[in-house]
Amino acid sequence: MGRTHALSGAVFGLAVCATVPPPPLLVPVVVAVCALAAFAPDLDYPSSTASRALGPVTGLLCRVIRWLSRLLTGIAHRGLSHSPVFAAAVGLLAWWGTGFLLPGDTAVWTGVAAGAGCWVGALGDALTTSGNRFAFWPLRIRWPRALRFRTGGTGEHVVVGLLAITGVALVTGTWAW
Image (tube, rainbow, N blue to C red):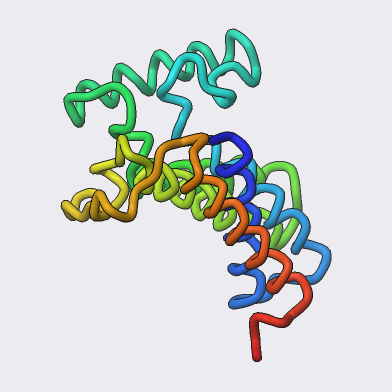
């Protein structure tokens, strides 16, 4: 689901920019951060792209997140890191961390994009056959089984196609008929 996470994050970033436009120079930053942050929920899975991205650093982060998730939700994978609470924490951390490096609105937009991207990644996992019962935590909302798909299967390919079409519509402005 790596490409689907990245694409859903990028398209969501475009949707955020179309809805609440940032300064024009920050549009690519918002889209890129949103796309990368969509991988963050899978920091709880040792063989995920996110957990292997920075070698021992993300490997250690994976172990910490799994431990916290087990402690707070009772499960290691698709628990805490797949919740809006985690997405908000990622957003706040990105905002705080970027604030030290970049001036003005950049930190705020980076935080918004990181939190939004992280949450959209968790929502994407909720659409798979394995599901994600924490996507709307503390609410207990789950997608109906009939609307879920197997990763790598036809359903995911359809989602990728729809995301691509939506992304093109957002970039070209045709979404605003």
